[in-house]
Amino acid sequence: MELRRYWSVLKRRWWLLLVPAVVVLAVELITYQPPPPVYNAGMRFLVAQQPGEEARTADEQRYYNWLSSEYIVNGLSDWVSGGEFATAVSQELARSGVNVPAQAIQGALATDNARSMLLVSLTYGDTPTLAAMMDAAITVLTEQNASALPQLGGETAVLVQLDPVFVNQIPAGIRSQLDLPLRVAIALAAGFGLALLAEYLDPTVRERREVEALGLPVLGEIPKK
Image (cartoon, rainbow, N blue to C red):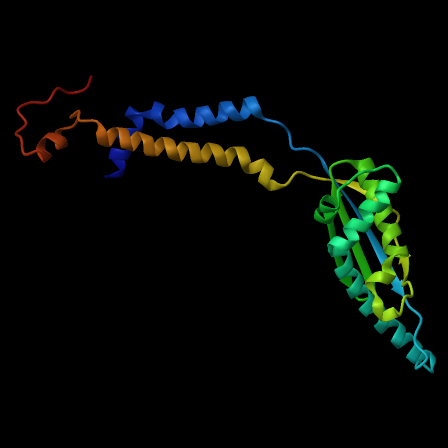
């Protein structure tokens, strides 16, 4: 089908093209609810650990201290990402009267490590609860990390908190902004297909070429006004 044929079909059946898009747009406008706000709180920790007895000089002490701190950060990062840490944070929150399931805490947690620095991030939809979650996470991280570091022989690693807790709102992502335009575009594509289907199933002869395609002679043609 040539482009002019497509254009003539769309001109003749434009309402079929628009109906799905109008329906989708109307439903979206009626049922639209703004996305709930999402907040994030992040924290950085430095890990300090005393060197072993094998460190004799000051340089050796600094080297072993730095090396052990890197290993500890890696271990703590794995611990924070697991379910055991989330369960401990949930239990710590319960002592303060805040009930957040461990699964929700684990889904809200993100962690990273760089050298001897540990980064912990929490994302949640309620600022007071998020602040309480971060406080509980700090308590568990600084006071209960011995269970995650058996190589320390039961000792608790020393974590130095670098930042105060700041809660920031995360702006809406581009996905939520493009959701409605994408739905309307898909509806327009469906309407285009519906118009072509209706044209294909319609037995009406409207153009000279359609008569000639049937092998019939054209005796006359009434021009459009």
